[in-house]
Length: 270
Image 1 (cartoon, rainbow, N blue to C red):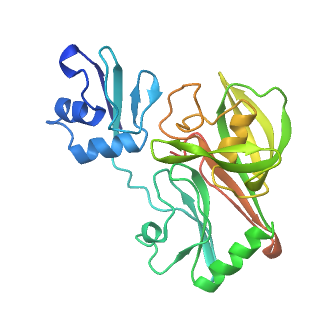
Image 2 (tube, helix red, strand yellow):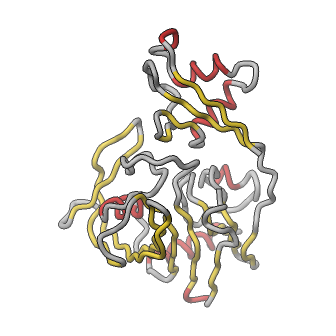
C-alpha cells in the first residue's frame, strides 16, 4: 500500500527548495528524513519527470507528486548457495558496498556491483580468496550476464551489437556522465542486445554485456535511441517510473556449469 501526495506551487512557495516545500507541506504526516529518502529513491515527480535532488528550486505552477511506500518486510531471497559463495535477488535501493551487504550477511564480500536502483542477481563471496577468483572469472569473460531493460521509444532495428570506448563526459549534479567514442580514449565496452517486445511507448530489451564498465548499458542503450526508463542521467525523453528499469536477469558461471536466474518478474522487482 502506498500514499501519494500531489501539489501545485503557488506564489508563496516560489524559490523554495523541493525538500523545504515538502517538509513544510507534510510536516504533520512525514518526517524530513522520510521525505529525503523518498526523493532519493525516485518516488518524487516534478512536472512529469522523476526528481532525485531535494535542493532544486521550485517555480510557480510546478506540479509535484511524491509517493511513500509501506516498509518492505520481504525476506532476502537466496537464489543459489554453496560453501564458497551465494547469490541473492537484489532489491532496488540496496547499495552495492560491503558495509551495506554485511548488514544482512556479516563477514561476506561483494564479488561485483549493480547500480543502487538495479535489481536482480548479485553474487556474494564467503571469503576474500573466493571474491578474487570470481573477479578474475569476470575479467576473463567466463561469467556471462543477461539483463532486461525497459527503454523509452523503439530502436531502428530489432537487434544489434555496440562496440566502443566509454570515457568520462562530465558531471550532472555531482554524478559522473559517460559517453561512447569509436577510437578512444576510455575503456573498451561491448554489448549485444535484442528487442523482446514493445510495451506501450516503450520497448523491453534483452542485453548481454561482454564487458562490465560503469554505466555501460545505460550509455549503450541511449546510443541506440532508447535510454532506460527512469534513468535520470541519460534519459531526457521523460516518463515516470519509481526507479531506473534495469534488471540483472541471469548469470552463467561457465567453468562451474552454474546458471542463476532471478525469481522476480522484471515488472514487479521494485
